[in-house]
Image (cartoon, rainbow, N blue to C red; front, side, top):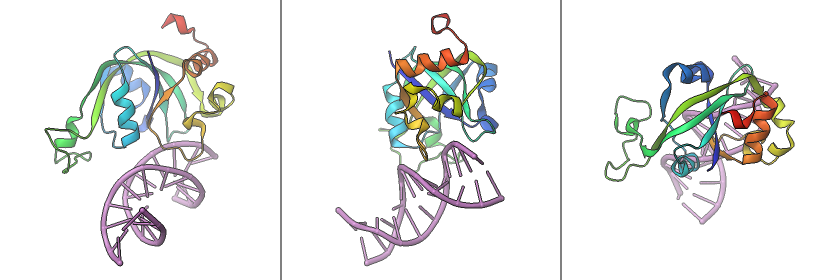
Length: 156
DNA sequence: GCCAACGTTGGC
DNA sequence: GCCAACGTTGGC
């Protein structure tokens, strides 16, 4: 089992939105490195849900992968902002997974608080200028984030 | 293959 | 809203 972190802008789609809808296709990823991570995700993998471009950037909750990578349909919709005219339907370029809300953090674990966790020193998340929107986290990083948020990793 | 220009991300 | 950092594009 692998652990992941997904970034989302709460003004567009925040953790409360995921709780409201239950399951959500994680579409619109248009970065090769992030896409490759999406393709490595397995059903059941836990994900930290991160709020970016927010007044208080940080981890808002835990999600879980409910469907492994499949073609992102937005790439074939000319009316959609994520349309990619050069993607071959026989060999779709972009993938998405489906995720489900698992548990909200009691309060957002701020980026500042994440940076203070020694396990996170090597993560792209805490590196200045990092724009990777889907990234792997170690089990240690995942556990440390849950503990810092006041949750028991075994209670998920 | 290089690299400047551009558009986007994301913390502040 | 600002701007540094980044990934992508396209001229050469």
